[in-house]
Length: 201
Image (tube, rainbow, N blue to C red):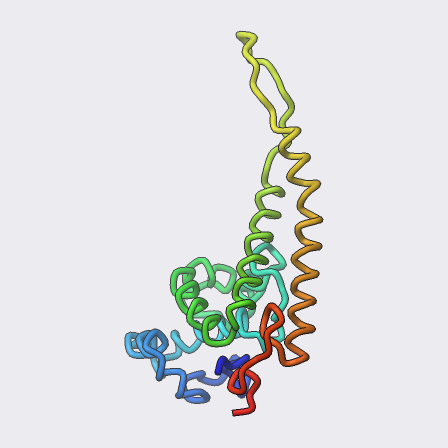
């Protein structure tokens, strides 16, 4: 059975390994715990809490975009509880990005059904697309000093902008359908959950 959360008690001040020692049963989590030589394994505990708040379905931040100034990664990185002696809170994700990516993969696999993972990846792709559009310069055709045409991107850029809202609308419609199916005890796509998926056994 895939659990919809690995956390029974949420905190940022308590050590996650003491609250949830069962997490060490997983090889990847146990490796982070074992290799962490900080006092009380506090460094890896902080990493685990960060991943939990960013990616657990029961987190208060579930549903926030992942990237961007208002995304969950940057917002959580700026929280004072992630402050360390050598790590500025604003840089927490950047400094620990490889570890967070590895821990995220495991966390999501343990708390998301396959259809939900697909939706999360789709959402992340769309957010990346929006970020690319935001950073792309709008360029018209022009000519250099030798009279050679330098092709702009107006047509392609306009098409990309016009398609994006429709793509987000489709994603949100599928996400809403998924939530509806989940509340009815169905797996993604319409098939009924097994007894174990539904929590009966």
